[in-house]
Amino acid sequence: MNFHEWGLLLALSILWGGSFFFNGVAVRELPTFTIVVGRVALASIALLLVMRVTGQQFPRNPRIWIAFGGMGMLNNVVPFSLIVWGQTQVASGVASILNAMTPLFTVVVAHFMTSDEKLNGSRFLGVVIGFLGVFTMIGIDVLAGISANLLAHVAILCAALSYAFAGIFGRRFKAMGVSPIVTATGQVTASSLFLVPMVILVEQPWTLPMPSVAAIASLVGIAVLSTALAYILYFRILATAGATNLLLVTFLIPISAILLGIAFLDESLLPKHLVGMSLIGAGMAAVDGRPWKQLKVLWAIRES
Image 1 (cartoon, helix red, strand yellow):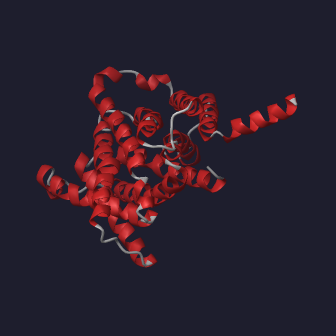
Image 2 (cartoon, helix red, strand yellow; image 1 turned 180 degrees about the vertical axis):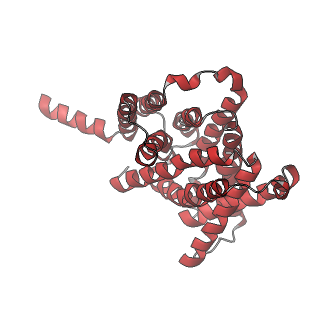
Image 3 (cartoon, helix red, strand yellow; image 1 turned 90 degrees about the vertical axis):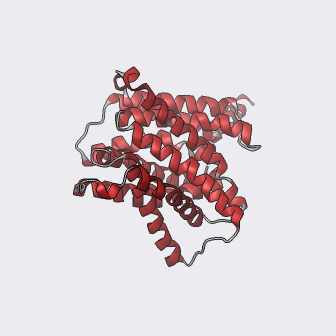
C-alpha cells in the first residue's frame, strides 16, 4: 500500500473504532434490530444525499443490484446483527479482540477465492503478530468469564468471518465500474430494504419508550460516521489495496479506541498499549511486505 492508502486506513480505523462505543451506548436502551436498521437506514439517507450532491446515479444493471444485496448481507445485515447482539453480553474490549480475527480469516478466504492474494509466510506471520498485538493491548483479564457467554463470543467471531467474505466479494464492484460512493450507498440501501420489514415484524420499534438524547446521538453517530463515511473509505481502499490489506483495519481499531480515550476521556497510556502497538506495527509491515524486501536488498548490498 502507498502512503495515501495507509492514511485512508487510519481514518477508517478511527471511524470504526467509534462504532463499539456507539453500540455500547445504544444497546442500553434499544433492541438489536432497531439499532441495526437505524444504522443502515440513516446511513443510506446520508449517502443518497452525497450521491445527489455529487451528481452520481444508481446503475440500472440487475446484476449490480444483486451484488449490492449480497454485499449488504455479508457486510451489514449478518455482522451488524451478530455484533450488536453479542455486545449485549460481551464487553467492548472482548468484542474488539474477536473482531480482530477478521484479517486471519481473510488471508485464508482470499487464498482459496482469489488469484492475486495468495497466502504466504510473511502475510500469515504478519496477521498473527498483529492479533497478538491487539490481545496484548486489551489484556488477558478481559477473557475472564468467557465461558459464561460462549454463544455471544461465537456470534462475534461469525461476524468477523462474514466481514472476511465481504472483503473478497466486494472486489467485483471495481470490475463492474461502480464508484466507491455508489457501492457504499447501494450496499446500505439493499440492507435497509431487507431489514426494515424484519424490525417491523420482530421488534415494532414504535412501541418502545422514547430513547435518551445520548442513545439517539449514538445511533446518528454510528450511521453517519461509522457507516456512511466509513464505507466510502472502505470501498476506495478495497479497489486499490485488496481485501487482505483493507481488513488490517481491525488491528488499528483498538489503537484508535485507546488513543481517543486518552484524548477525550482522560484515560492513561499504559506500557502494554505501547507493546501492543509495536506488535501491530510489525505485523502490518510484514503483511505489506515492502520493509522486509528493503531489508533484504540492504543485506544483499552489505554482503556484496
